[in-house]
Length: 489
Image (cartoon, rainbow, N blue to C red; front, side, top):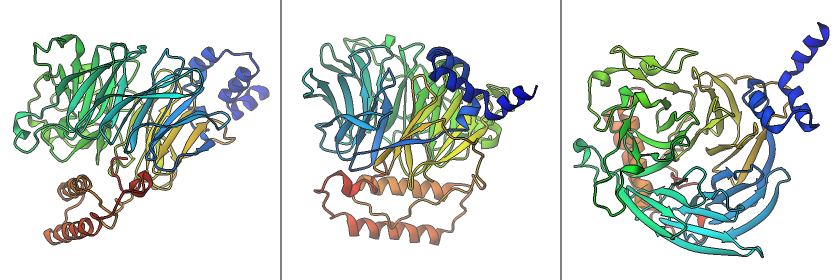
């Protein structure tokens, strides 16, 4: 009995880590037995910092085998890392002339095909040749910044992009063709003020790769079925199969969406700007034409689910999504991810420079990790190990492994969210000015900030002064000059 208690005190998960390392437990069995262990999650800490980029690191992800991390930055470079040693395997110029927003390795290409998108609106392919040389190629272009691309699961050829021009494109590397699928249109009541929906995020359902979701600067996530598209463009494909939105946000023109992620069970995570993160199942869809209802009166608290459940009902017996609270998503376009071999956890960065981890079921916050002095934007899980990679406004990349001796506890005052960096932050472009105005309007209309008109006017005037003072600043020095000022880093 004493031996059993001693073993429990050090954590059974730690014992299994040792058994895996000495070969007594296979990696696959370990992943399914202990990969989702809360004990391991509570022992996550920084294993290594990867330093070589010269600007904000906007994208990090593992390759399919999990032995390489690929990153992209405001310095316009792509770096492939051996994350376990911290060594750079390859570093090259992406060919983009503005900040790289996303870089991914195409599966089943021996890690030699890398697709990228950036603030210059370009979508590029880089092939790594046998001699280590790189062959860059322009595949397509958007009329505006391209924040995300999504690779069809298991395909070495197919991927999609979405951009601030509202356009969704389909790429096939076999023909090097780019097909413009549709431009995302707002609902009828918004068309007067919003000609298109600026898109920030795109994700593909891993269980059914025919389905993909897009989201951006309105309250809706739109789900499409590529099987309904006619490749001769004979049909109109811009009508979603489903809309998703928390009931209390329907009709709210002050919110937007920055991140999407599908689980292995086809659940859909949606991260809102200046709001919370929500988990949807397919039966929570609003159909192909959303209708504003009395659900507008529902409070945010009414959408919270009881612990231990995967859904809950509102007053009208309608399913409402799980909500995840505590982080802050105001300043940048942040992603959101599942974590664990069966997507048992939800992870997100925050404006406060911390990483938040919740239990997927019930929404309990279990970890808050100090990660960055400024903002954490990207967090991606290892494909089969309890390992995370993160990046943000700082120039380094952090690898997190469960090596801590002691379990972590939640810090105090988690809900004490920091203020935005304020109007003294340089605003160097009309796009940044509009984003600041958008954020100011959200804060003005928020029930948590009942500001007087004079205060609003003062902040607006200060913002205009700031823009006038900084609009002539040259950005010829490259990505480092504006990396801290670009709200969509």
